[in-house]
Image (cartoon, rainbow, N blue to C red; front, side, top):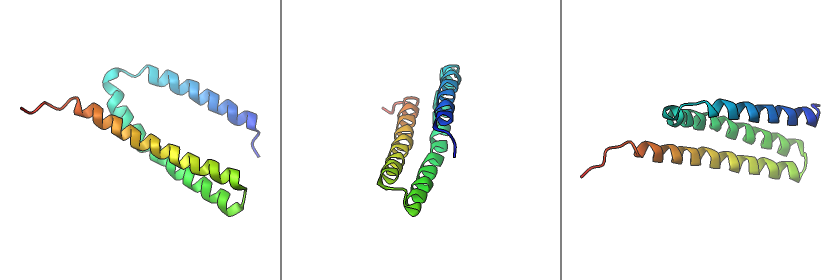
Length: 98
């Protein structure tokens, strides 16, 4: 079993690294980058579904199942909200019809 301190350390390092990577992206690349990341976030939903299913089958308790369901909902909100924002950004570049 992995020690929780190691997991928290990995989370913090990934958060800081992600911040510095995104901070250096030029503004012209934000829309394509967001679109690609939204598609990649679909993997998060699959992982959340798999983890919740394993928790349900293993009978790890109601808390694990509730947290898994919450992870599924939050990942879905992330994906659909991200595609909505990307769509709105792309609509800003369409020419207005008279």
